[in-house]
Image (tube, rainbow, N blue to C red; front, top):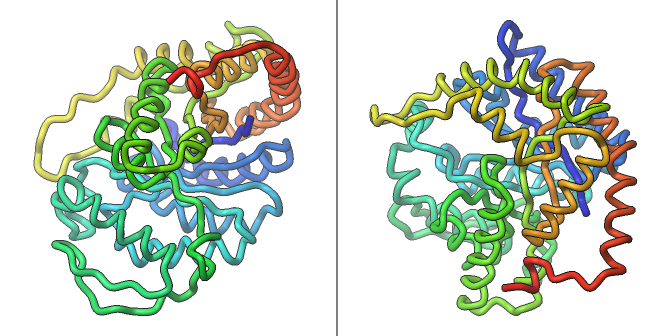
Length: 359
């Protein structure tokens, strides 16, 4: 099982942007010190929900400050960027980091970002598959041209080229999936999914099953569909009791969620109902590893068993505090990882039917 942190750089009420970003950077450094597998960086524009506007830029900074840990974007929002520009950045980070960078891609939403960056609503509603395919060709080929509805240019060389002559050794790519349509987009291209923290194990297992069926129908080898490397996003808060851990999140999360979600503005004025911050906090505590180290390990093991997903990106900054976040990340490494290893060893000794073999 591969456990990483999910860094949103959320601006909690009363905080400055610098404080949120300092907490994000420090949590990534501590994740490496604690022996975690990866750090996943979110990207948002114009909202306090997350104050990192370029996940790739922050990834570059953290790759320079760390030595071992994997760093990924979760996600770089493709409709607000040019696929070639993003592909160039990904190839650069892949090469200079020795392969520690993963490019997470997402469709985003119909936010005012599309107006500010001049890409328009079509980039979100119509052109995402075209942009995604252009990005993937840029990462895998030596020369690329485009003749689509959105992107048109003559053939140009890929520089720097991260892929080898056979088209392999390029940056790993994962695709954020929130609907059957995006699941099928990922499966047809053989891309692992990043599944959000707002859904539980049952829905994630259904999405994995849909991905697998679509991938097989699209001609992917069976072995590739069984070891896809999907990533499950969630929340983690570790305490000496479940009550203690839940109370930390109940005190801090609703204020951040309320101001962060309410700040989103649609590009075309459409109404987008936002979640109730208190109800969402309770849901996150129910779905994810929030409690004692043993409870957290058991919940992660149960999710892996039910869904077949063994890679996790866990939001550890739920307290909104620098010291609280550091402490939470350290406990994830020192207190939970050893228990996960014990759970895995015990499970391996039993005849288990997982989501990977059940569909």
